[in-house]
Image (cartoon, rainbow, N blue to C red; front, top):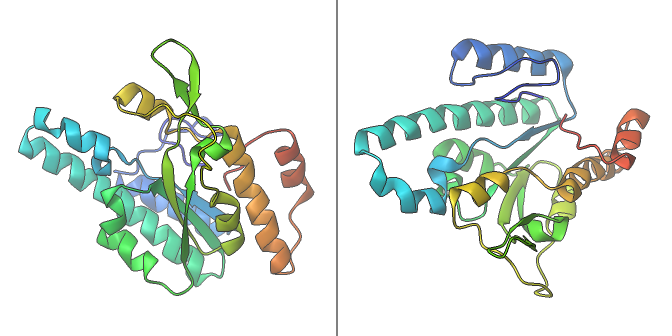
Length: 219
């Protein structure tokens, strides 16, 4: 994993730094993962954040947007690498986020090898705190883009309207909801397993055992 906080090896990554982007790209080229999962920070492109931008100066807004575009350009570069090498990627962002119109992402969306699907995260167990202190499901419609149709099939579950939702209208709830729920973490590797089988490839037994134990796999 390449976590901006700390990865499995205790290393922090800062993809605003060219040296870190180069090192991560070299590692991916060397290890040749079957699936790369990308979820760049969405704060600068979310509807919620756009409501709060009146408190930020135009110059600061431009600085933040420029930094976000660096990360998106890097993610798109990795996705292109996966496509060139005949491997797969998965990209996810809120369905209403303006990031889907960013040119770096739009170019990937136009690739005939790439498909999209929208799923509601309440179907995977995403919850948030309600005003009375209880826990309610949060819908959070999310758009996914991938070169692996089987993964998209697993992620395209939509809410059937059988339960109430708590909206994510403040930064605390929205930030907590940025963490994928366990059900979604399981759906991704299971979809990767489906895809590998369609391609005549067996998924490693270690990955299957990790799924069964409830561990999210981000490879």
